[in-house]
Structure formats: structure tokens, C-alpha cells
Image (cartoon, rainbow, N blue to C red; front, side, top):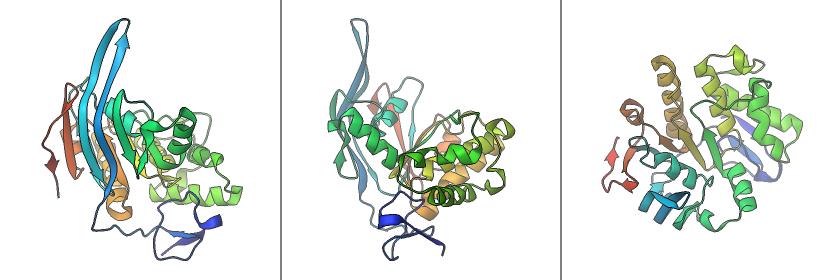
Length: 264
């Protein structure tokens, strides 16, 4: 078991474990068998305006996501799946209804409160990586930690561990242009997990990758869920990618299918 000290015992850290003294974390997180909802969505609606026209996107969405779950949201283009993901992640605001994450009603938060909440509770994985070209892999992963009180030495320890977890310890000084697409997405995943967020949200994470690289990324995400208990919500149009999730929920014209598919 590998442990590192954390100032105050409540700092952001990759993959917090249990059974340690205050001020430590471990990368051997245990998953609980009793999964409580980490996300609770009630009576959610969302629409957009185009001039005087109101375009409904999501209608009366109700469902829970258990803690430590790997859930895939599927649906055709325009079904509202990315909009729903953005609402869960606190990027967008609902018209009506509530989104509770970890017992907090994020729909009642101000923009400032949401920004602060996202910084410590949500790790984002995008289709096109969203890495900063002039920064190395190490510097890209370090970015979220610059908003914390961690010392330079502590930030380095966290970044090195995150890059080790995605198998890129030997690429930390490389720039995005020197990495393959699969390697860039691994850097993006390391950046997403470096603050030990409550949720990992992934929007078409394999959409820009070849089949082999896509398989590697899906396996990495499955490992983060399986071994470290990370709650993952993934939007995908690819049935093969969705098979890696434990639960598949489908959206059709803004309406959530009442039935879900479960993969054990």
C-alpha cells in the first residue's frame, strides 16, 4: 500500500482510501457493497431559446446514480445526453427540477459556488482532450491543483501518481504534439483524477480514437471504477463502449427510457 501525507487530512488527492490515520491517503481504495445514490435527479427539464422559439431538450427526467457506479448515457444525436451530462456536472442550469450530488443541491448554487464545487468534485474527460499545447503532460495535469493550497512538492507528488496510474510516467515532459491520441487522452484522464473528484464525467471519450486506443482508454476507465471506486458517467453513441459500463440509460428526444440495461 502506498501512502502520502496530506496537509490537514482533507486535501484533494488521487483516490482517497480508508483505514489510514488523518493526513494520509492510499491508492488501494476499497469499494463498498452498499451503494448509496451519489446523484439524485428529480423532475428535471431543460430547454433552449432560439429567438422567440423555445426548444425543449429534456423533459421530466428522474433517476439516481449509485456511488461507485459506471453509467453510460446513450441516444441519437440531439437526444439531450450531453446536455444532461452538463447539468449533472454543474456546467449548465436546469429550467426546473433538482440535481443533488453527494447530498448537495447544485441547482440552487450561484455561478461562483458552482465553479468552486466543480473544481473539487468533478473531473472532466472530453472527446478532443482539451490539453494546452504549450504545456507538458505534467503541467497539463498539474493545472487543477494550482487552485489548491498544496505546496509545489505536494503537487508534484500528486501529478506523478496520477500519470503513473495512466501509464505515462515516462511521458510527463512531453508536449501534446509529441503524444499519440491515446496518450493525450490518458493525460486528460490523469488531469481529471488528480483532485480525487466525486464524479468523473466523460463526453464521447473514445470518439476521436482508433479502435485499439479506444479499447485502452475504456479499460483504463473500467479500472478506475473497478479498483478505485470512481463514479463514472459516460456519454457515448458507441454500443461497444457502452458495454464497459455497468448500467446503460437511453435518451430519446429528451425523454429517459424507463428501463435500464445492466451489465455485471
